[in-house]
Amino acid sequence: MRSRVAESDSDLQAYVDTWNAVSPGDPSTVELQRKRRDRDPRRLCLLAEEGDALVGCGFAGPSDSPGRGFLSPQVLPHARRRGNGSGLLRELATHLDSLGFTSASTHVDGEDEGSLAFAAVHGFEETDRQVEQVRVIGGEPRPEVPAAVSFVTLSEAPHLLRDSYPLAVEAYADMAVSVPVTISLDDWLDGDGAGVPAGSFFAVADGEVIGLSGLCAAADGGFEDGLTTVRRGWRRRGIAEALKRAKLAWAAGNGVTEIVTWTQRGNDGMRALNERLGYTYRSVSITLRAPLPLRSV
Ligand SMILES: CC(C)(COP(=O)(O)OP(=O)(O)OC[C@H]1O[C@@H](n2cnc3c(N)ncnc32)[C@H](O)[C@@H]1OP(=O)(O)O)[C@@H](O)C(=O)NCCC(=O)NCCS
Image (cartoon, rainbow, N blue to C red; front, top):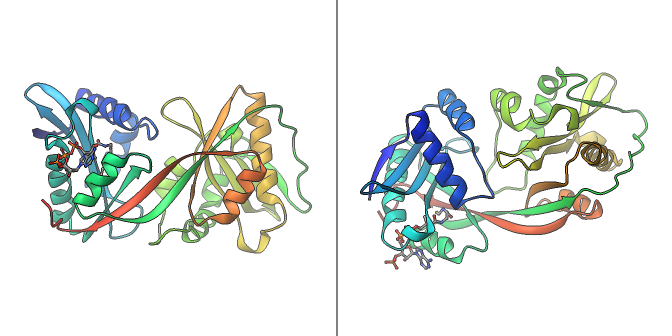
């Protein structure tokens, strides 16, 4: 196996096609990769080849947790069990090591026994789990808006995205994960916050954003819940439920047939709310971490 950095548009297209073939549940696009790498050149996208044939790809770069790296080798099914994954992992881990990171995390589909075995062989241990819940859109009545707040969409008031950044920071700090995750203002404005403007709802009280529930268009053409959060002092008043119901009503009126959401295993409140709203469970994604340098490579 030989690997090289994906630089040109055609390389990045090959990288994205390979990634999407191996991990269709986590789709990406050339535009997204290009934009993210322009912002942070520490992001490394590799292509893996045997002779002239593309057999896999891999990513390594900073994770959402300060000071920690993230990596993921991806090998096409027909090219597995002959060292390609380990070869990619070695280069990805070496990259993170050279950037000064002392640990690497990765994500593996909870039902993919082979990839979990691979991760274990290389010293990765589970730290967190995220569950995927899916809501099929039917006839969705518009909810009553709770007292003292008004609902506004991002398309009606684009400035609310920037205004809601402190609320997003609070929400990320509250996430049920083993190490804190953070979000930069750029990432909030550009990716995690900015979704489908007409389907992303903000709860405003006295001119301040006190809750939000975003809707994102996934790279495979599907729709995904963005962040849903309510400011600490405003919780348990039905605001999150009403925000999500407003989003479901918008989805029903705009041809959306299904919305997917990912929630941390320990986030009982959000999962219970999703269950009440009719979301059903689909898959599980496991987060694993290993110290750097990797002992196995
Ligand atoms: C994980 C993945 C990258 C492994 O790629 P690969 O090229 O098959 O890996 P390797 O050939 O280097 O495997 C190295 C060792 O890992 C273990 N391993 C790999 N696949 C395994 C499987 N299906 N069952 C059991 N053990 C496995 C074995 O110990 C293997 O050594 P061996 O073949 O001598 O027994 C590949 O399965 C994949 O792309 N999975 C989906 C993406 C993913 O989850 N990536 C993140 C992984 S950290």
